[in-house]
Image 1 (cartoon, helix red, strand yellow):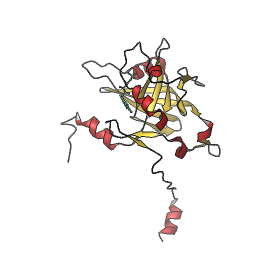
Image 2: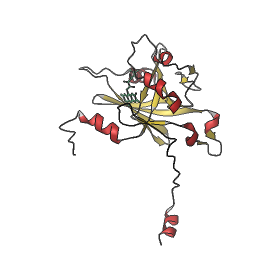
Image 3: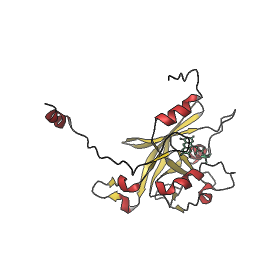
Image 4: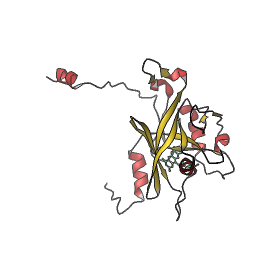
Length: 211
Ligand SMILES: Cc1cc2nc3c(=O)[nH]c(=O)nc-3n(C[C@H](O)[C@H](O)[C@H](O)COP(=O)(O)O)c2cc1C
């Protein structure tokens, strides 16, 4: 089957979220200018480079005639800081509740059963139940069509000690059990089931094996 996204732009979301998968999930905590805390998940997310350390998040405006940004995008524009809480199996259901459109006076953080812990550098707190978190400052926000692409500079990292191999420091990914989002229909993938180790090889090693 072929799809022409210039003719049928509405198919783009459904196709891309199913094909660019699995995706890591950023459960972002941010605050408005009055200190009101917000948490919401985003899977249009990845790290983009490490020098400097930059993560990117794609936030679509709310559907409707006008360009109404989601609370996360609005908060980051106004206060310039946010925290990416890493989503693991044990907090998946709580994360999902944070995507519910609760009335603005209700805090999804508490309703989902999360508690908070202070960040080391930025003002928005991290979620205490998340085993790792990236503290970010807005680097820039690009407004593209009905979406915003937010680039955040990672200024601090929190990882629970038991998930850090101090040698690297590397993350013990096989213990962390991060999850990935699949196709936007509520499907997720675990990372514990088929963990593989495929070391990268140098050209010299490859030549040696392929004379
Ligand atoms: C796992 C998951 C991933 C999501 N990823 C995105 C995303 O990448 N971009 C987006 O705009 N919305 C995404 N959403 C929807 C937002 O989380 C949802 O619109 C949320 O209510 C926004 O909250 P806010 O207004 O508090 O920022 C995702 C939802 C879930 C459950």
